[in-house]
Image 1: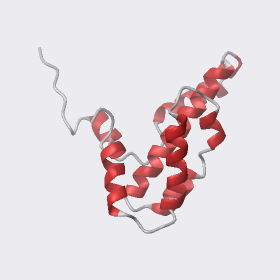
Image 2 (image 1 turned 90 degrees about the vertical axis):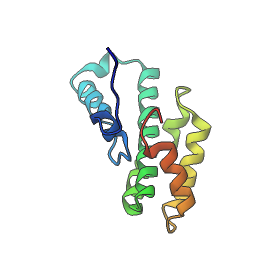
Image 3 (image 1 turned 180 degrees about the horizontal axis):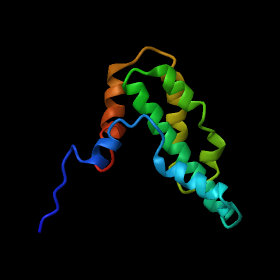
Length: 128
């Protein structure tokens, strides 16, 4: 038996140019609010916030690619650099550079070359 994977499967379509935060974060937030926060370790929570910031940066880059800069600025405002720096579980330097670049790019007209780079890096979804 061979596993078939195509570009139009549900998970592939979900990841392609995703403009909403990953659904996993909403689920985890619900669990934490329901009482699991008392069980969570500090470094785990810091890692979660670092991953959330990483995800929001990808969403903002995708919105830039789609020429939806006002929405991208709104998403970017939710990213707190201190959360990225607080955990070693993410690529901190790369994400801070992306955060700074997006702060500039989302205020300027779309640059086709940059949008193409963002699309090839994040717009195609994972594993491409």
